[in-house]
Length: 277
Image (cartoon, rainbow, N blue to C red; front, side, top):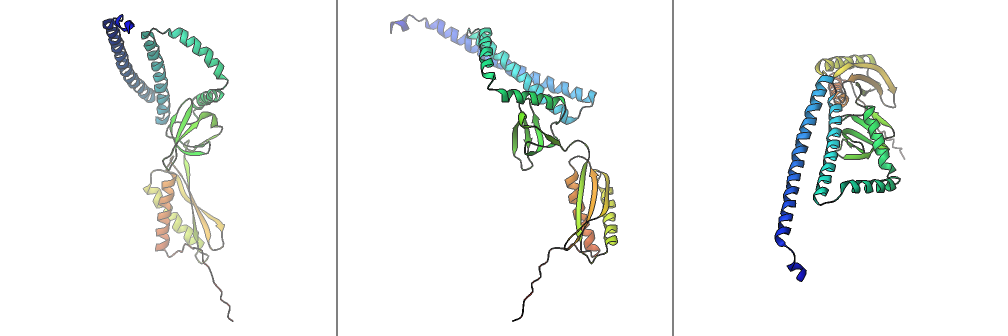
């Protein structure tokens, strides 16, 4: 092992020590820069939201996208600096990567489609963070909109990662007031006009108690005539995402009012006929 004897260990240890110190310094600088940049982006979007009167969901969407873009750029710059410490020519590496990227680009058409679709989703304001949407076979609340994927959390808690290219059509349920609809059945023996009067009294009371109701509730009248009941329909317009709570409140109040006024809510019956021998 004569070659080991020819190595100047002091210089090697010194060089390794310098490289380690540089790497630690770069890591610290990276963490500090990322934290400061994130704070500046959040502060900037808070000011823009106040001045431009942007919605909270729209602000969160663009803020998350800006933070992601900033992080990618910062990681790229840090990587170039680290390569320079080890004496690697970053410019040549990038040029080589560009040629390789062009070669594999034909196999990454899905990724390009994701990015293009994500760009137009944001440009056309089709959805924002916090919106209730249905798309690509999933329904739920939008948690994050990126250039490659969109994250939608279903109402059972499942977080769905959807490639943007799969969002060919989208239904946004959070743009404007929503409809609350309640159908309630009464028996054929009850007086329809009396039942509708009770229903409207309940609707008027709920309207005074619930500030999320924008219009109504109103009794439309007889919706269907079934085998064992007559269905009356109540409809209202509510603030976004409040329609389900209003429907539950209406059903509870209607049931209690019908009980107090001896109005029956029919249920299926079965009649057995036994033949005598």
